[in-house]
Amino acid sequence: MTVINRIRRSMIFLNTQRAALVKDAFVYKPDCVILDLEDAVAAGEKDSARIQLYQTLKNVDYQGVERWVRVNALDSDLINEDIRAAVAGGIDGIRLPKTETAAEIQAVAKKIEAAEKEFGKKVGSTMMMAAIESPLGIMNAYEIATADKSRMMGIALSAGDFTRTMHAKRTVAGTELFVARSQLLMAARAAGIMAFDTVYTDTDNEPGFKKELQLIKDMGFDGKSCINPKQIGVTHEVFNPTVQEIAHAEHILEAVQNSKDNGVGVLTVDGKMVDIAWVEGSQRTLKLAKAAGIYKGALV
Ligand SMILES: CC(C)(COP(=O)(O)OP(=O)(O)OC[C@H]1O[C@@H](n2cnc3c(N)ncnc32)[C@H](O)[C@@H]1OP(=O)(O)O)[C@@H](O)C(=O)NCCC(=O)NCCSC(=O)C[C@@](O)(CC(=O)O)C(=O)O
Ligand SMILES: [Mg+2]
Image (cartoon, rainbow, N blue to C red; front, side, top):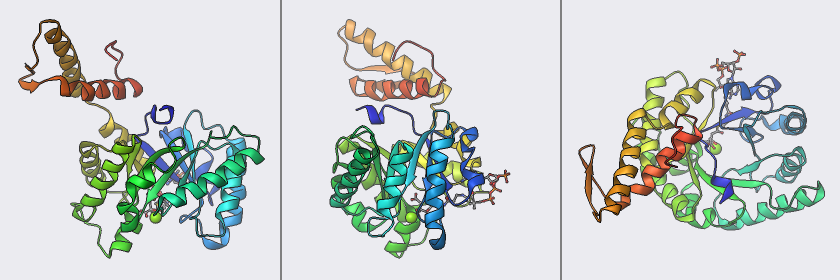
């Protein structure tokens, strides 16, 4: 699956209403940018933000940073023009906010296909991701994740709207998000697509942000939606495999290979039991490290 064969630790929201924010965001080296036409843009500025979006996509070289557009929701009267401008500008993917059903993904995929045809783009070349922001969306996460097997790159949790619709309160521990995070992750893994965690709004609280990053990395998320450039470096730092994780993964792959040659199934590596079930995770660690430019070995 080519769409997920890429590292996406950080996706930073850029408010398309503000030219100064969108024109050189690539200098912060995020893995992806999300040019926002939805909630960051004031109601009276939607048309000018969309024009700004098109000009940006046409004129700014994002230097390899993947470019996504968060369009307005399917039930808005803005989404058709949002998709046309994004596709005409040559976007990599569309992020649909407030997704609740597979039918919504299929309806948006049709609109994207129509825009690809209208603007002479290869049909199927625009990826999609769904932001899930409500209990109904969480209940339908697997159907959403599998609604379009060729376009869907990932699903993302959006905690601001999720806690609103749950009548819940964001807490430091994140207890209110635990089930939603787990269910969204399981849906993504079962569908074979990527999973992204929600934004962290307390931008001056780096220790708190780091703790949340460690939690979601350990749970299995692929990356995080960000809102401020100062969140990018720390996101990469936490998501990148550590020196110890890289060394341990190498030891496992070498030891399992040797033990296979010697007819041994279970063994001890760095003091811990290991068998064939550890191989895939170790390969993933090394692939991630290679994609991040911190592993040059030949084991993957
Ligand atoms: C929070 C704040 C206003 C703080 O501003 P401040 O200016 O106080 O920040 P400072 O740190 O002082 O900025 C230092 C320098 O960086 C520049 N700079 C700042 N932010 C930048 C950025 N994003 N990109 C590039 N550049 C940036 C700034 O211009 C300055 O440049 P300079 O003046 O040259 O030094 C600002 O960050 C911001 O607007 N963030 C994006 C907010 C946004 O898009 N929200 C919508 C998406 S969430 C949502 O909708 C909820 C969700 O839907 C989520 C989901 O779906 O997942 C759900 O339901 O949960
Ligand atoms: Mg939201």
